[in-house]
Image (cartoon, rainbow, N blue to C red; front, side, top):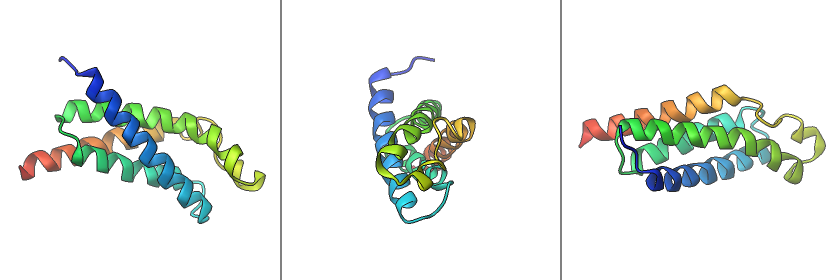
Length: 117
């Protein structure tokens, strides 16, 4: 299977930014330690639905976005949040969960888009 790495990189960066912004807002609103998981669900679904890619590429995009969100949440949290809130978001805290959730949501959204069109 041939992948267009430029498309994957651009869409993954967009998904990462969307998930980090939504996760940060959720964490500031005291949603809890699962705020980045919810944000990855939303970000993966947005990219899977709006990106013009097939299902396999959407799975790769979601997985890459989940990987980087799991790492960046631990870097961003101590810089923005108070220490009591920042300890909820360690570096790679939900490593596998974010990767699987990002890939799953991105792939399902791409599948739904494929079925609708």
